[in-house]
Length: 532
Image 1: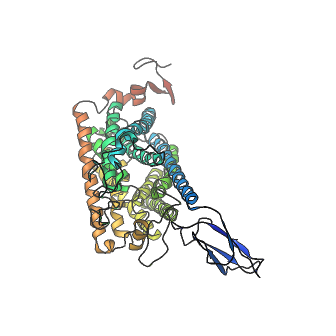
Image 2: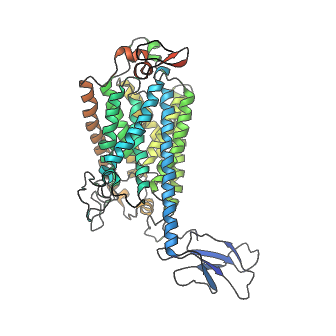
Image 3: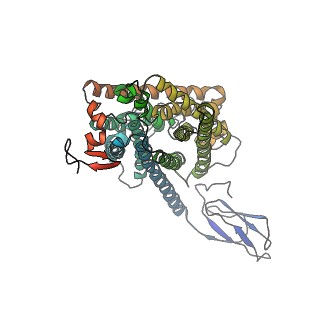
């Protein structure tokens, strides 16, 4: 029965129906279901007999053969969940390749080696920092506030250092998936400070972001003890932030706002690229990226990886009931929610691209590829928070509005004289804000109930929008303040930006000993020496 889910006492059985209808054709059999359907007529096009198995009996006459015990079913469900999370985590990590292509195509050839190196170090440094401390600050002992949480509190987690509590081999998939998200947040920043940031300064910021800034936001919104969290539950079953907490299903705020606002802070602190200070329009135009092809391939990979990002945020596939509606509709398993998330994600991304295409043709009088590529990303970022709690038509509206918000934000940033080479703030920061707020506008009571199990009118009453607004303000404020301390501290110490000469020759030559000659990258013997 595709509408039912296995209960805690279900044992899968196959019915051997006997009697006058010995030709019975069991034409539909779903081993993950509670009930099986059969026909009492050979070759029938409809099913007129239902066989429901339980731990003791079946509702149909005849002998039964046990296909699996309860413990075997539980083991299968656990394996399915872990496999799902691992595959989705790999897809999220695959987004690093997309970021690398997009960013290398958006910078000049003399800086491609540098931007690729930053992407590599984001993942590598982030993995170690998140393993040692970041994951612990984010999730701590992973218990509810009314349990023995140790030193965990509503602000920060404080347990399971370096995964020392993971001694049963059943929880490592959780760290792997969350690390992939942390790497994505760090990578967003690299695009905002591209072509002029010293590597050492960037490494310092990556350490702080993946160890402290990002994990704190994760704890607030996604842990079971965080004060903004929809998963916070006290002894009375209530959230700290009434009624449902902040709903950010896959990270419009947690991941993208953190990366986007950190990138904006870094771009302001480091200042614009030298060429953009020139009065000569030809000099300013020289900062154009090196390859639209790489940008297009990068966005395609990011779009693909986003299905792991959003759909994988169910954190399971085969197990459990996510929620039950007030009308006693059948409850859903995680994979049902994941399927809907994939659809809403697709619609929002597609509408983001289409909307920016129309804007490009009508306003700019041409079809601008890079604008439409960012339109895709704007739609994806916008739908990341509400993807599980909105209908497809709402996903379309979220994508349309998200792309408009992106264009307006991008133009505003440029008008303010802020140099953000990849529009990281407009795409991730501002669209992240819109994504979080859109939950309070477009989410439905039934979708929230099916996804989170909360059956209330928080959306209709405006309470949910209030919660989302609080979340936006807190995440933006936290990220901006902490990032400012790091970026402006590095600036005042003279460690943030490369010299004018190094910027002129390119960071590939000054930081990596690689110089572009006649269109080819040539390795230098040492800094300042002739190439070989």
